[in-house]
Length: 115
Image (cartoon, rainbow, N blue to C red; front, side, top):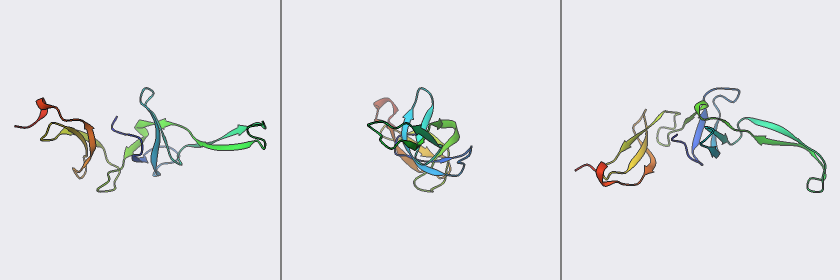
């Protein structure tokens, strides 16, 4: 999974298709993420000392990682991402549309450095 917290993603399927938002939370085990202003639901809350008025809270629910595409920072298009090794041996993710680097994934390792 090449998506991290604070990345901008675009929803590709479902009711919120075409919406772009920032990733708020990730659940790598379940393969789900929470995107800002996407998949909003109402949670009904009873009156209590903590919430004296009660009512409905609007909150975001998780969606599957397969339903979003990472937005490239350079070409600002929702594109697939790949991984490649750089000359110093570090690993980065890159946009498959424009080829621009999109952040480091792993630190440099000597065995992957180009000689």
